[in-house]
Image (cartoon, rainbow, N blue to C red; front, side, top):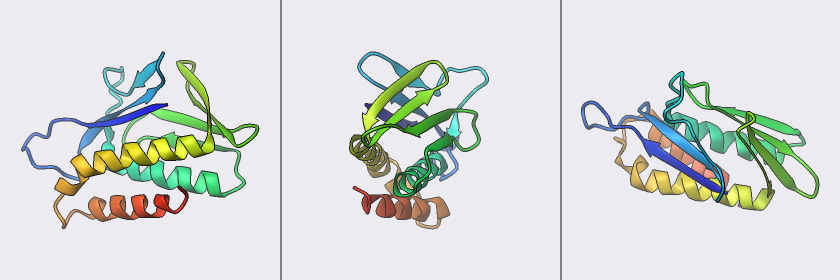
Length: 145
């Protein structure tokens, strides 16, 4: 599975926890992106990553069968459904569907979020509350790896 995040250019060149960005998800055959959609599906990328990390962590630890991720300030959604043998079915409307082992999904999400944080999250001012939220979400998510 492929998962990537990108940060849109900031107007004043200062990064904020509420800046917009995009997500790409897919595989070797299909890559779905929140970019270039109508209506615009840019999301508050840092807040969305925190929401994804917290949502997947709770989804995998509890007996719930599904989790619907809705990006912050966007209509971009990803559905996660538990299937047989510890697999997760990931779908985005009728554009993309893939079944992946739960452990592979967890590792892919953690790696993509950690990489984004190491590039952009560390540049957030210490006074930005989203920086601490993201650090906590990554730390909590690390517990399920």
